[in-house]
Image (tube, rainbow, N blue to C red; front, side, top):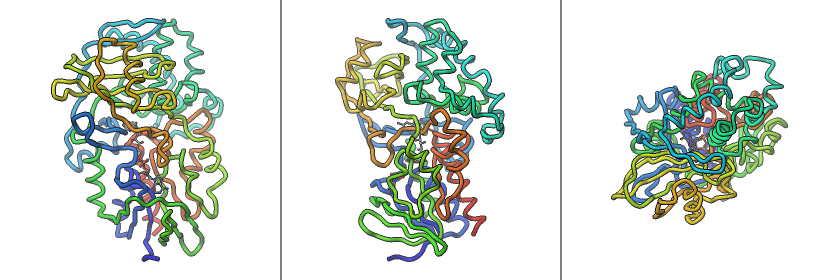
Length: 429
Ligand SMILES: Cc1cc2nc3c(=O)[nH]c(=O)nc-3n(C[C@H](O)[C@H](O)[C@H](O)COP(=O)(O)OP(=O)(O)OC[C@H]3O[C@@H](n4cnc5c(N)ncnc54)[C@H](O)[C@@H]3O)c2cc1C
């Protein structure tokens, strides 16, 4: 039995680290318990394929207010994904080649129509439940919306591909309201949204930001510690770990992704609504992979339909005369990020000339501490679950990008959520 902390935080991802820093600044004693042997959670900068790579969350943007203010605060440098000079897209059964402008010209009418009513429903991205008549809209998937548009076949295929990429899942599993909320955070502009998702990176990796926040917060962090049970009541909370350690605290912040939230035994249990949300899980189920291809190639990008195992790729770096691509697929169960042959086959659909040297990635969906990639709500989940997920149950407070409000799903949403929960706790203390 150790000392009693004001707050125990479960998870050292961006939500946990941010909450810890804020609580420490206000004088609280804080212990972070982290299952993995590193901080960062679903962001992970590590040496692979000849350089530091982010296997999880990567891109940031000045349109994302919380992460950008952290970048400013710690004086971090930004690097830019090379601007593509060529585009390849697979539609109507064959590969097309053209300029990125031509491809984005094909996307534009359908993408604009798919989110034309964004500001009508979500005028303020940080108040997504402002309107009380969202129920019918929330039942729809982004695929239902695309069906309604009756787009010409090539545009239809491309728009589905773009949304499948955004959801990191087949488009039928993604909630329309989630798509509109993302777009609302990007002021209704789908191209800005795309830029925010895939253009600007923290030069020395997300690790640089996670470290800066952790060092600034100076909270005690115990790595390699899997929390199994949280008992809480009028006298405080007891947190037990898989190695049978027990810690006491006044309050507990839980930052587990929704898809693994039920791996902790809460006593008393979380609200029925939270349990239902955790049981359903959110939509993302895809994969991200880094691919080293032989030789230097002009920057290019590729798009394909969600039926393909890889639906997007773009050039990111050159290393010792080779080129590093990043790619995404909508279903990790179909193509694992370490399946070099499968990845080569998928990539060769667009560019049979590419010689794959090696691949690197992490299967976040199979990982027991994430169970998902970036969180994306399914149809119906916004109106059924969001309010309750953001509400504490006794001494248990959820924080994380799964429970964020604005850029939920992003690093930004994790930071935002960490700030909210820390403020709630410090006003309560
Ligand atoms: C492949 C991929 C690509 C992405 N791309 C981007 C991007 O380009 N830009 C962007 O902004 N976002 C991106 N994201 C999303 C972003 O990385 C996440 O939304 C964000 O990092 C989540 O932070 P979090 O603190 O909410 O959760 P997490 O980072 O998941 O933190 C939760 C922590 O809890 C720990 N934990 C879990 N179970 C236990 C337990 N029982 N006991 C103790 N600890 C436990 C986990 O190990 C983890 O460290 C991406 C994510 C993935 C996976």
